[in-house]
Length: 225
Image (cartoon, rainbow, N blue to C red; front, side, top):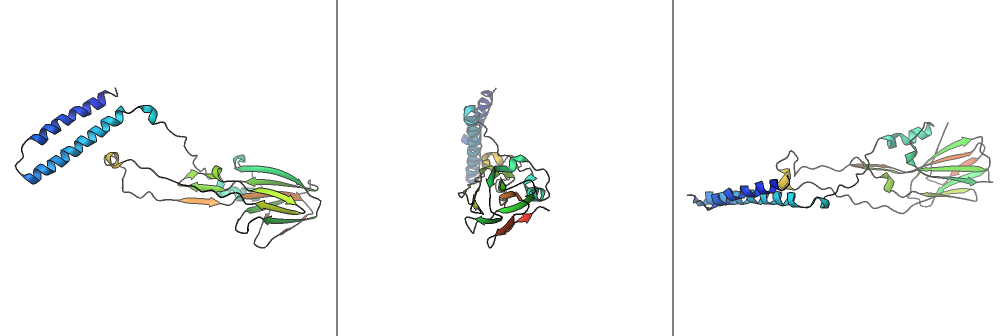
């Protein structure tokens, strides 16, 4: 079936070539007809070649997941102790602590992390830290899994959130060539626009009931009530 389409298209070129050779009275009209006939012939040849190309060169790529909206209310759900999708969890760690004071810090003053603290009476001399991923959505696609996750260190009563390496994302948007788009409803000159949204990673801490928490200047946290 695939070979019939190119043959049919190629056969349509013959009448066009004959038409070009026919004398036409007006020179300007002749030039216009030649350009039109040549363009149509080029379209037909290009389409025929497209169908003759091997299919193995056009393998579909794995699509990027579409953002499902659960990221938008993740912080609120955690603060209200509602159940959240575990796909957002990037790491879970537990630390022993002898001090009664816990200071929260970030390795870089320019790096921001949302912090939620829950006091748990069943914890004794232990801090549990769960890191939830950053959220990055670009044109409806979920790129959150690509963002490096920060790590947490606890030493001498200071819990430090370590800034991860920077992520550089290059987004290329591809549209069909004008040869094809001119015959479809898609506008080749239409501006598709660019939209993105993101959020900081969330550190959820469970700490002993009686521990005192402090932060460095510029750092804040919310506490589960």
